[in-house]
Length: 243
Image 1: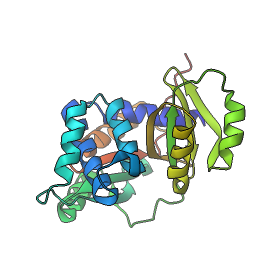
Image 2: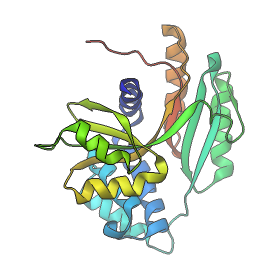
Image 3: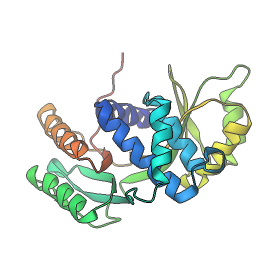
């Protein structure tokens, strides 16, 4: 699962480069969470997870509270979470997650960007065999807790046996359907959850040369610049830093 961490790390570095764009995207996630489960984080696991993301991205508390308040207003936009799947150049699979109030605009923009780079938009579900959808939690180290023992306990809650560990803490992966119960276990047992979200990890990797990688990076950057785009995943094989 170490490579899964490399995908996540590389994606985060590119995806959250612009602070204003980060806050806009997290604000949309808050609006969706509030609409679905209400404004009280104690009773809304999805909202608690988004707030954890906001904290990790250094979004001020005032911004978070304002986003929650705005989401309860009558005039707030009704965002839909839409996914788009296709292929970029060199046969690289591209999975785009969006939050939009205008699906016609969003699909046109995604299609246009893929086409400009020699790619094409596919049908929904066409990349199911390439990407695995997982819930992902990062927790701070806890004194007296052996990770192997914790994993054995969490397997019954839908967590996978393998995990990643680095200076930011321990990252666990699990069944997306078990997101709420994993989150509940960690919170009730005193673990500091610094990240709680969903991610897509490629099962099939495309190895590219430097020039090809640069083209894919430009395409991903163009997609991420779109205001409706939340996350972009590809199956381009990451360069693993062995240092």
